[in-house]
Image (tube, rainbow, N blue to C red; front, side, top):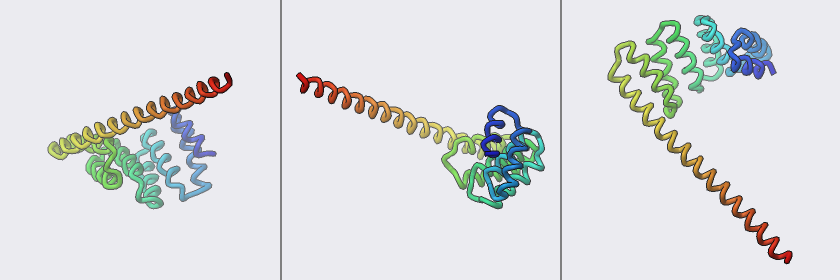
Length: 168
């Protein structure tokens, strides 16, 4: 319950209230890596970068396989000014989820700033390709959903017509 209250507060931009709710949720379950991750995000938004880092470290200690933890930790490190660590953390996130274009584009931004232009260009190309593929898949899903809807409507119309015809 506290976790969901925190998510609502975060959606409204109230990171102080979210922080308090998440701390309560963690008191109830210290192994809730999602709560630790969200608490880290709150502290990042509140510019408490060192506290946020400890939250992300706790989340990774509990679940080291979630790319979102690493990407949020990377954002924190970037905002803190530790760009080389942020670049490494995005690399870890990418190793876990190499289909997320945002990880590549965020790492490209950092790589540009630290003088890794060639690598940044490669990351941006990958991000563009992933975005194009994602849009193509979403369009296919959208089109197939429309096809299914039309098929169902025609099927219903057929049975209504057939039923009316048989009553005559």
